[in-house]
Length: 241
Ligand code: GLN
Image (tube, rainbow, N blue to C red; front, side):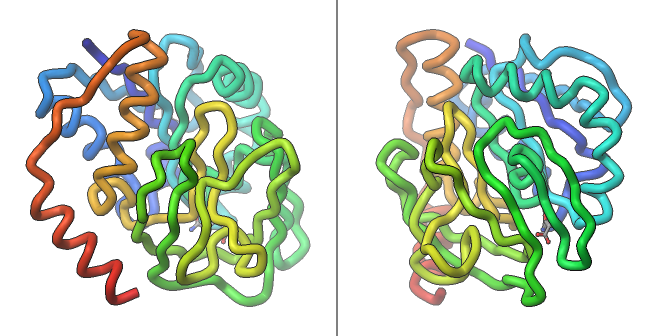
């Protein structure tokens, strides 16, 4: 078995170790004898997403998001929308998560027209939402308790056709108001959690990997790994937040 992973915009969107998510997915597959090839798709590169089994997009500041707009609207917007509708799993973090929505209006009034692959909008607020936080994933996203770190000014509101990734237990999540965190639509997992997210939350990592394997191979299972150290770290942090 093999998963082909695409890391989009690794040169522009990579905050707080977001790249660690790609390494984590790759290692957790390899430890089970499953091949995992990672292809980087930097700004300016052409190419279809159709051959990939999983796409990762990290976070970035308002400036980087604005830098990417031209490149996005030169065809990657259509590629991403088609890949999402085809059920290719996406993991997208913060700025990369916002980018899948319709638009982002920054606090100082600049509007970034994004790609509308997922029904959500983001509006910058004066107050930055910063800190460690935790949330519980919905059942369709595995139901695990996730610990993470958020740092965003954007307040995201979900449209009625999409679900949140989870429910906030401590911290801000999508907007600090409605208790939602991230998004689930088709096989898109969008979240505000930097840090990186997956090494600290192996259960969610395996849920995403299994989603990709089942889409590709029909039936698939993941052998359990010895996650004693990861679980001990996770539980200690969860108790502190
Ligand atoms: N620029 C966005 C915001 O502040 C995203 C930030 C990020 O990716 N950490 O809302």
